[in-house]
Image (cartoon, rainbow, N blue to C red; front, side):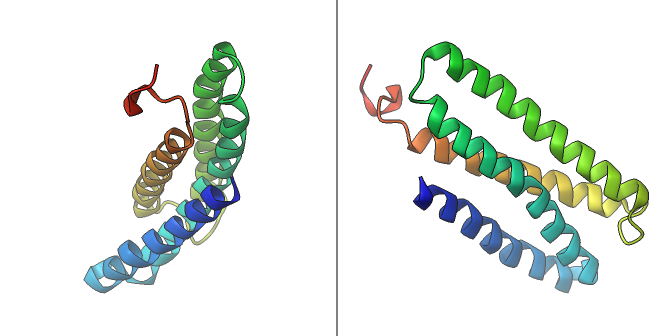
Length: 132
């Protein structure tokens, strides 16, 4: 569990460096690095919560796993959208910056894909591994 959390946080930091720094150089300026960093932090909080919840739910009954899939995705999306909207509307640096919304989408999709991959990698009874 701890290994997956460290991997999630480390991967977000690596993604920030590998994508944010070139974007800064290619015309995004310092705002690209700040926007991507903020987006990843906003997405990382529910990502960690979903990963912890998922580890617990994967050991439970199938109905609880369904709740994880539906509830985890809903909670993640609601949190990121609400926090992003607050920054976009009222935080001076992010106010009315469409680029921030683009970076928020990029960060959201990256952390979502990484979180799902980590949850599936944690399954021991996965159909993809030939067990049923």
